Image (cartoon, rainbow, N blue to C red; front, side, top):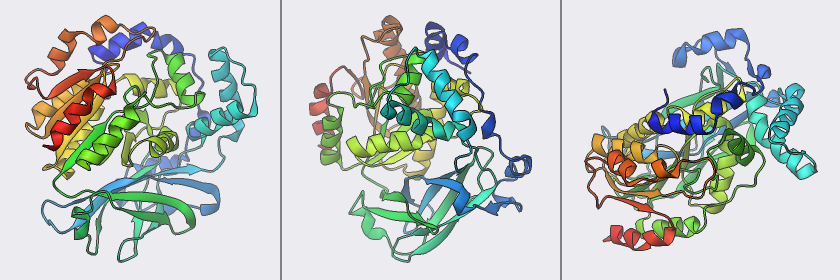
Length: 398
């Protein structure tokens, strides 16, 4: 259900008119038996190991934390996404042509064609529910973990205890350990270790650290599937300063669907401090669902993800960073009120000069005052240029 801010965005951008003409992604439908048995959850007796020759599996980076019940035990949520390799070949050409036609662009040039196909591939390949996978976790015991079974969206979630001694990770916050598929030496993931205390950062992505600058559905399609991603000017310098001053653990929280994991993960890895990327678990049967995921229920989704982070790391101090284009102020205000004292600082980037965005409402003092009701005024700060925050970041170290 869209809230006021989301409904305003959707109406201004005529999202419904664009969504009803988006192509269906028929090739994504999994085998009926696998889809049905995926509803059985972790106890699914019909789950099968993946076929390495015909499958693609993404191993998502994660963050290990110490159990509240057993303070010397580390555990982490391991997330993987399962696809059938090249299963979208029959439809991807049509989808590429449809998107370029809607954007009024000629998909000339091998670079543009390849870029569109690469980013669209996870939207057209068939998802694989009811699948399992073994990975080698390169900790001090070299453990083998079984991931899965994957759910109806082709994603698995496994909370796993890490056996062995990792207590020195507390004093070396941010140290990483790699895990990899047993059947694929090059398919790695990174586990970041976060002790129970210290700082953490929860950061939005679009228009907070990555330039999107459009609330329109066609603009979103262009920035997602065609444009080369660019950081918001001076935000890499700000994040580098935060990393130096606070040595935090990092979470990048976006309402984008998991299909964009490789695209967003690569961008963050190249420009910003490493951390865990949290995206929506959903497998859309059309690109209208993709557009809806960015504009409907984003506040509730983000609050739910921050609930999870609070469960893992309730004693850390948190800096939340977002922007004014969607519901970051409302989500961060809600989480502050829900867990008093957990969030220590909130930075909101005031986004301006964006066509088709009602800046009068989005950037109004009334909106921010309402979003941050009962949040002390010295906790939240609205900014336009990152340089405005340098002193505030330094003050957090004191």
